[in-house]
Image (cartoon, rainbow, N blue to C red; front, side, top):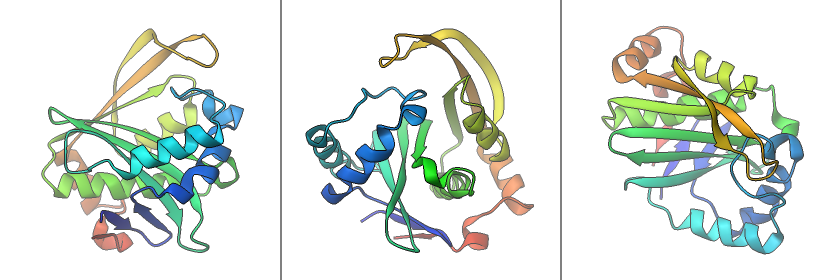
Length: 194
Protein backbone atom coordinates (compact mmCIF):
# COMPACT_ATOMS: atom_id res chain seq x y z
CA UNK A 1 0.00 0.00 0.00
CA UNK A 2 1.29 3.46 -0.95
CA UNK A 3 1.48 5.87 1.95
CA UNK A 4 3.38 9.10 2.50
CA UNK A 5 3.36 10.47 6.01
CA UNK A 6 4.11 14.03 7.17
CA UNK A 7 3.81 15.52 10.66
CA UNK A 8 0.09 16.30 10.19
CA UNK A 9 -1.00 14.25 7.18
CA UNK A 10 -1.16 10.80 5.69
CA UNK A 11 -1.31 10.70 1.89
CA UNK A 12 -2.77 7.31 1.04
CA UNK A 13 -4.83 5.30 -1.39
CA UNK A 14 -8.54 6.19 -1.55
CA UNK A 15 -11.10 3.97 0.17
CA UNK A 16 -14.81 3.58 -0.62
CA UNK A 17 -15.71 5.22 2.71
CA UNK A 18 -13.99 8.41 1.43
CA UNK A 19 -16.84 8.97 -1.05
CA UNK A 20 -19.13 11.10 1.15
CA UNK A 21 -16.49 13.52 2.47
CA UNK A 22 -14.99 13.81 -1.03
CA UNK A 23 -18.40 14.74 -2.46
CA UNK A 24 -18.88 17.32 0.31
CA UNK A 25 -15.75 19.34 -0.49
CA UNK A 26 -15.86 18.79 -4.26
CA UNK A 27 -19.44 20.09 -4.39
CA UNK A 28 -18.45 23.38 -2.78
CA UNK A 29 -18.89 26.00 -5.56
CA UNK A 30 -15.69 27.78 -4.54
CA UNK A 31 -13.74 24.55 -5.04
CA UNK A 32 -15.49 23.26 -8.18
CA UNK A 33 -14.96 26.61 -9.90
CA UNK A 34 -11.31 25.83 -10.67
CA UNK A 35 -11.60 22.11 -11.38
CA UNK A 36 -12.47 19.97 -14.38
CA UNK A 37 -14.89 17.51 -12.79
CA UNK A 38 -18.67 17.78 -13.16
CA UNK A 39 -20.48 19.31 -10.21
CA UNK A 40 -22.52 18.45 -8.27
CA UNK A 41 -21.02 15.06 -7.56
CA UNK A 42 -23.84 12.69 -6.57
CA UNK A 43 -23.39 10.11 -3.78
CA UNK A 44 -23.35 7.35 -6.41
CA UNK A 45 -20.86 9.25 -8.54
CA UNK A 46 -18.62 9.84 -5.52
CA UNK A 47 -18.70 6.13 -4.67
CA UNK A 48 -17.80 5.24 -8.25
CA UNK A 49 -14.99 7.82 -8.26
CA UNK A 50 -13.59 6.57 -4.92
CA UNK A 51 -13.63 3.03 -6.31
CA UNK A 52 -11.71 4.12 -9.44
CA UNK A 53 -9.19 6.02 -7.32
CA UNK A 54 -8.71 3.03 -5.01
CA UNK A 55 -7.66 0.87 -7.98
CA UNK A 56 -5.06 3.26 -9.46
CA UNK A 57 -1.35 2.40 -9.34
CA UNK A 58 1.07 5.22 -8.40
CA UNK A 59 3.99 3.41 -10.02
CA UNK A 60 2.39 3.20 -13.48
CA UNK A 61 1.86 5.93 -16.09
CA UNK A 62 -1.47 7.67 -15.66
CA UNK A 63 -3.33 9.27 -12.79
CA UNK A 64 -3.01 8.39 -9.14
CA UNK A 65 -5.20 10.29 -6.71
CA UNK A 66 -3.84 10.52 -3.16
CA UNK A 67 -6.38 10.85 -0.36
CA UNK A 68 -5.15 13.51 2.09
CA UNK A 69 -6.03 12.42 5.61
CA UNK A 70 -5.58 14.50 8.77
CA UNK A 71 -3.68 12.56 11.41
CA UNK A 72 -5.44 14.42 14.21
CA UNK A 73 -8.86 12.90 13.59
CA UNK A 74 -8.28 10.55 10.61
CA UNK A 75 -10.71 12.60 8.48
CA UNK A 76 -10.42 13.09 4.72
CA UNK A 77 -9.10 16.63 4.18
CA UNK A 78 -8.81 16.56 0.40
CA UNK A 79 -7.00 14.89 -2.46
CA UNK A 80 -3.96 15.37 -4.66
CA UNK A 81 -3.70 13.85 -8.12
CA UNK A 82 -0.47 12.96 -9.87
CA UNK A 83 -0.37 12.13 -13.59
CA UNK A 84 2.83 10.34 -14.58
CA UNK A 85 3.53 10.10 -18.28
CA UNK A 86 6.59 10.61 -20.44
CA UNK A 87 8.62 11.98 -17.50
CA UNK A 88 5.92 14.59 -16.88
CA UNK A 89 3.69 15.19 -13.91
CA UNK A 90 0.53 17.16 -13.57
CA UNK A 91 -0.74 17.72 -10.08
CA UNK A 92 -4.21 18.73 -8.96
CA UNK A 93 -5.09 19.14 -5.33
CA UNK A 94 -8.29 19.94 -3.55
CA UNK A 95 -8.88 20.66 0.14
CA UNK A 96 -12.05 21.06 2.12
CA UNK A 97 -12.74 24.82 2.40
CA UNK A 98 -12.57 24.79 6.22
CA UNK A 99 -8.93 23.68 5.96
CA UNK A 100 -7.73 26.40 3.59
CA UNK A 101 -4.96 28.69 4.78
CA UNK A 102 -3.47 26.23 7.29
CA UNK A 103 -0.58 24.90 5.20
CA UNK A 104 -2.07 21.46 4.50
CA UNK A 105 -1.86 21.80 0.70
CA UNK A 106 1.75 22.99 0.91
CA UNK A 107 2.63 20.08 3.20
CA UNK A 108 0.97 17.56 0.87
CA UNK A 109 2.54 18.97 -2.31
CA UNK A 110 6.03 19.03 -0.74
CA UNK A 111 5.62 15.44 0.45
CA UNK A 112 4.60 14.16 -2.98
CA UNK A 113 7.33 16.17 -4.76
CA UNK A 114 9.95 14.79 -2.37
CA UNK A 115 8.73 11.26 -3.01
CA UNK A 116 8.71 11.69 -6.80
CA UNK A 117 12.16 13.25 -6.99
CA UNK A 118 13.61 10.56 -4.69
CA UNK A 119 12.21 8.00 -7.14
CA UNK A 120 14.24 9.60 -9.93
CA UNK A 121 11.81 11.93 -11.71
CA UNK A 122 13.76 14.62 -13.60
CA UNK A 123 11.02 17.20 -14.13
CA UNK A 124 7.62 18.02 -12.72
CA UNK A 125 5.12 20.13 -14.64
CA UNK A 126 2.01 21.64 -13.14
CA UNK A 127 -0.91 23.63 -14.49
CA UNK A 128 -3.52 25.75 -12.78
CA UNK A 129 -6.44 27.99 -13.63
CA UNK A 130 -5.00 31.52 -13.86
CA UNK A 131 -7.79 32.80 -11.59
CA UNK A 132 -6.73 30.40 -8.82
CA UNK A 133 -4.22 32.71 -7.15
CA UNK A 134 -3.87 30.50 -4.06
CA UNK A 135 -2.72 27.55 -6.18
CA UNK A 136 -0.33 29.76 -8.15
CA UNK A 137 1.22 31.04 -4.90
CA UNK A 138 1.55 27.49 -3.57
CA UNK A 139 3.38 26.39 -6.73
CA UNK A 140 5.75 29.35 -6.38
CA UNK A 141 6.45 28.50 -2.72
CA UNK A 142 7.16 24.89 -3.74
CA UNK A 143 9.90 26.13 -6.11
CA UNK A 144 8.08 25.94 -9.45
CA UNK A 145 8.94 28.47 -12.15
CA UNK A 146 6.11 30.06 -14.13
CA UNK A 147 6.85 29.00 -17.70
CA UNK A 148 3.87 30.32 -19.58
CA UNK A 149 0.22 31.18 -19.90
CA UNK A 150 -2.25 29.64 -22.34
CA UNK A 151 -5.07 32.13 -22.96
CA UNK A 152 -8.57 30.64 -22.86
CA UNK A 153 -7.08 27.14 -22.96
CA UNK A 154 -9.49 25.24 -20.70
CA UNK A 155 -13.27 25.01 -20.92
CA UNK A 156 -14.79 24.82 -17.44
CA UNK A 157 -17.48 22.15 -17.82
CA UNK A 158 -19.49 23.54 -14.90
CA UNK A 159 -19.67 27.20 -15.94
CA UNK A 160 -19.01 27.10 -19.69
CA UNK A 161 -16.19 29.65 -19.25
CA UNK A 162 -12.97 29.49 -21.22
CA UNK A 163 -10.17 30.09 -18.73
CA UNK A 164 -6.47 30.85 -19.00
CA UNK A 165 -4.09 28.12 -17.84
CA UNK A 166 -0.76 28.85 -16.13
CA UNK A 167 2.13 26.45 -16.86
CA UNK A 168 4.78 25.70 -14.24
CA UNK A 169 7.91 23.56 -14.15
CA UNK A 170 10.30 22.29 -11.49
CA UNK A 171 13.54 20.43 -12.20
CA UNK A 172 15.04 17.85 -9.89
CA UNK A 173 18.23 19.88 -9.39
CA UNK A 174 16.28 22.95 -8.27
CA UNK A 175 14.15 20.84 -5.93
CA UNK A 176 17.21 19.29 -4.29
CA UNK A 177 18.85 22.71 -3.91
CA UNK A 178 15.72 24.10 -2.28
CA UNK A 179 15.32 20.99 -0.12
CA UNK A 180 18.87 21.41 1.18
CA UNK A 181 17.89 24.92 2.31
CA UNK A 182 14.66 25.82 4.04
CA UNK A 183 12.06 23.83 2.09
CA UNK A 184 10.55 20.87 3.99
CA UNK A 185 12.00 17.55 2.91
CA UNK A 186 11.30 13.96 3.79
CA UNK A 187 13.97 14.08 6.46
CA UNK A 188 12.78 17.40 7.90
CA UNK A 189 9.11 16.52 7.95
CA UNK A 190 9.29 12.86 8.88
CA UNK A 191 7.79 11.69 5.58
CA UNK A 192 7.64 7.93 5.38
CA UNK A 193 7.00 6.12 2.12
CA UNK A 194 5.46 2.72 2.84
